[in-house]
Amino acid sequence: MDRRERIGVGLVFLFFLALYLLGVGEGVYSTDGETMLRTTWSIVDRHQLAIPCSSRLPNAVRGPNGRCYGRYGLGPASGRHPPLLAG
Image (tube, rainbow, N blue to C red; front, side, top):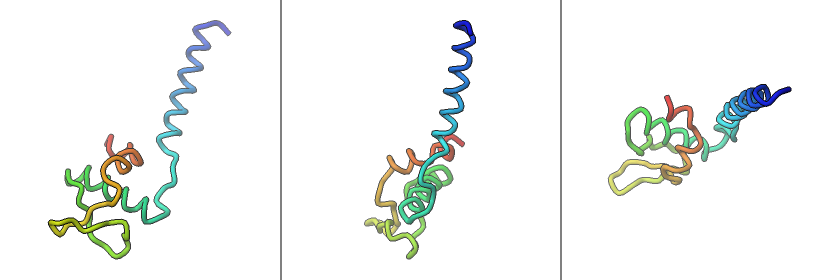
């Protein structure tokens, strides 16, 4: 294999590795994941951090304005669900 072919194979490998890494994660199997996903949806759909208050989300805290927010803030929510933010 010459140098050009190795570079091509390497780029294809990196492309599929990047796709794989975007899709892996814990998923939404806990209230933590659900809270972060709802925060991400709220950012994408409504351009705000407030999420619907629910007894099913113990990680949502009520703010001084009466709205509920994810306990984790913006960082984990945007880092956990990049395809939603890209869409």
